Image (cartoon, rainbow, N blue to C red):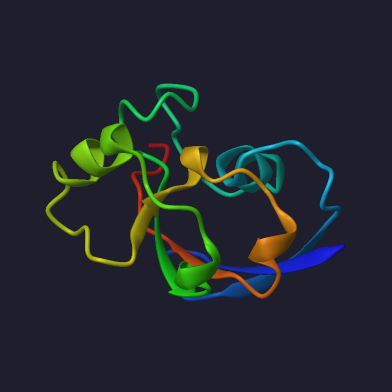
Length: 107
């Protein structure tokens, strides 16, 4: 099991306990945990509505693909610690990860 801490748009934090063999993206886990994320493109790195800011554990994540970097470049509030949750597959290296939800929410 790994623990990931999620901070919502209101600053509330929740710890999620996940099995390492869950075979889902962080976006899918967030949506399944009732976080208000649009994820309009369904995980194809085409919309950036699953934008998260990595507060802790950035060095443990795989490098962003060119497609992900291109999409992040379109965001006015993206920083060096920004990632698309749809491009992050749950992995044991994510234990202790802390993310803040930044992307658009449902109306």
